Image (tube, rainbow, N blue to C red):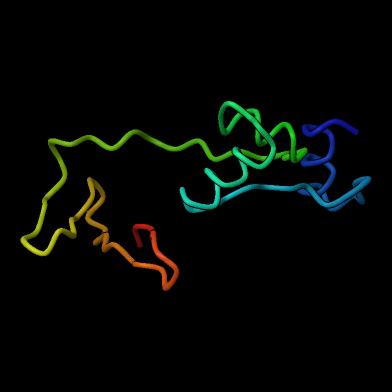
Length: 94
């Protein structure tokens, strides 16, 4: 099965050849994987890992973002985003 067939089987409650895979990683993990596998970018990493799904979302419209003094912000949909620092360094917006 290719990725489309695999995902369509899964969402149609039919058994695919394997579970469809996705990849989400904080920038530090992605950078380490790119270096480990000597890959140029995230697209190449997704191909290398046989990822079936990719996130496609709307672009953030900066004129609708409200920044707060502590560095957090409300996005264009009114969701509060705060930076979460990971114990080993780095972090992500939540």
